[in-house]
Image (cartoon, rainbow, N blue to C red; front, side):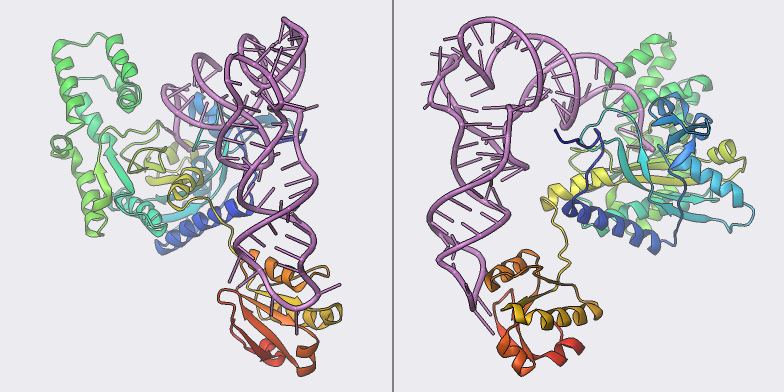
Length: 421
RNA sequence: GUGGCUGUAGCUCAAUUGGUCAGAGCGCUGGACUGUGGCUCCAGAGGUUGGGGGUUCAAUUCCCCUCAGCCACCCCA
């Protein structure tokens, strides 16, 4: 029995790789448009890097082992701690705001499902050193422009945008929640959609005074009607972020939705996720502001905002729209021969064309001309160049356009120099 | 990690109450067509029915275990 790939890991065939390359190209192209520089870090990190900040959940899902030097190490499950360390090293010399992006392969040991594997590539885009709401708008706009670059519009993809500071204000000042309970309350709101029982259980577990319970119910009700929460003073940064997105012409993608909290504990302000409009898949992208993390991990006090966008859900979305992926044709010209004695001329022509930068293939064994043309078509070649005894005698070749079947004789010198296929 | 559903050629799927039911289409290889592809026709390769065990005269079909995939929860990097 053949040894198959580990669960949650992918054998990437050329057709699937073509799709991945398309995603990567959109990532890099938009990042470049936004003035972001690419960085990278080690795929293996000391476990300590994650225990410092990420908490038990992430540490429990690490690919973790001891190396031959007796070090406790893990395959990286996320990029942010590495980014924090790198920025901290050069924080003094880097001009702020820092705009950096990376496309790491990340690993997590957990049960796989559609859109969630044990390995994926994730674009990370972060702005470091700018606390203002326009930085938030900037990274959200970049995320939106990536899905736009892939051909999706507001009817396909939605941004759900929230701000933890607003929820926190309502929970503490209206409901009277002790700030120690804040994280639990946010987590309960986060679960409201997926698992309402867990949220009500959280409320039931604590004895909440009557007045607070009413305020809490009012808050939960207003989650569906963001206008009231948006009117608060603490909502000013979110309002400015929205205004920025509106001025960029991207407001049609954005829904303010206070049910978005995001799981990670380190977010401190604006949080957002991108979803397919039908909500059939997992989040395409998630991010937000994490102003305290760099101080905790790297000892440098710099505000940050950023997001991660994985290749898996994005690939599913492209698949739903475009059908199965197809590999990009790499062969433009197929050089075919009539007989064995034409071989040398064909090899010479093929290599001359390759020197011109044209993708060229030819049959590696003696084959009937029909078979060679069949292969040329299967490869997606635009043209076949046929060389036979007659052509060689005339210093020419037959150029057959495979789309139309039209043929013309062309001088070999012209093919080698400047003929456009 | 918890619970549920599913598992037949590379792909999409067939196979009456367990009884020639291991097949079709597409794809792949070759041929008709040794100087011209797409169409058509013919032939071939490819399966220990995910794996293991059990019940039975007989298992793709029933039972158990296991592995894998999918869905929900967990979590969402």
